[in-house]
Image (cartoon, rainbow, N blue to C red; front, top):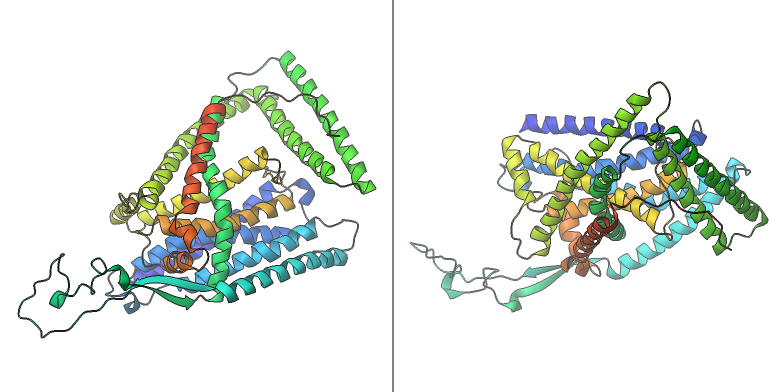
Length: 508
């Protein structure tokens, strides 16, 4: 057991370093050229936020591995666990909440502040906005914690009479108690034995619980859409792929049209800048800004597609070959992702929505993988949790492009501004809490007796005021409904090529 504990500590340290280095790599390659060699504080927040989100997802498999080191102990308290997981969970999720509600908003306000102002004035302005937000959040948290910050556990009061020690035992499933009593077994006890045990939750646990509720709403919407659109978007991207290169005359014609569209967008952007300087920033102005942003993103996609179907330069044939291989890779990844998505949806229905569960399903798969090799099931478990987080991000990107009331913050390779980075990091951090809670519930059989299950399974699902959301599986049902609607949407419209838009004009 000592060797296993040492291996767990070594793996944990290595993973933390790898996560940090990988997030720095993402930042360097996704950042916009305008942000190079500046905006260091927002960049630090981005790397920290992404690292916290990734580490929090990895902590649940670590929690399982940590508990499995004591699987031969007679009871949990008889084993000294390698990692103090409950303290680590609370520390990570308090940091998560501080990042989402304080540090990331401050970094966004500072980054988007008037560049003509001094650094001190920009910091002061950002502090004012964040200070107001912090006071409001503190008041809401304090009032809610004082009024309903309690946990109501449903328990059964069981009892039994005593008799002299018998020479032989005659217990059975139909008669589990002595002297004919029916109150010593939960399954045979009457309804009157059910009691409610109330205790006050700790404040850190309450903060984590409320953050989880906010994240659960986002998770239900974005995760439900993303679990379907993530694989299907890759598959239909292959279906809509360009079949052959175009001629030079076709290229000139298409490039001319895109040039005209670019001039229209530049003219519209100049007009909006002029309105902004004059101070007329009303609802119509904001609507036009979103419309220009959406058209600009579509123009970038059209330019990229045109470059794909008419590769130029000495490496034109190589470029076209790489394009073909890229679409084949999308097909393979899409089919694999579809299998994982279907497995997730089937597991939710079989294990969570049907009571009692028809089968442990993926829980049993992970256990059998652990029997093959000690950490194989844990690795598969981590993959399914990470896939769910990626699905949330994919769903957020899709809805951000389709719905006009959601601010578009696209992530583009080599063209992502820090405010978009910060927005998406905040979304990932909020969703990561709910992903962990969802995974600890969906894989409760595999992750039993872990610190995560104690926090997210027992305390959260018994918290006064929100327990019924979990009792009646509101989030799981919403997740499945949105996933089904997204499957139908892609089946009906996913295979169609998008028609080029006509002349762009600002709304008057």
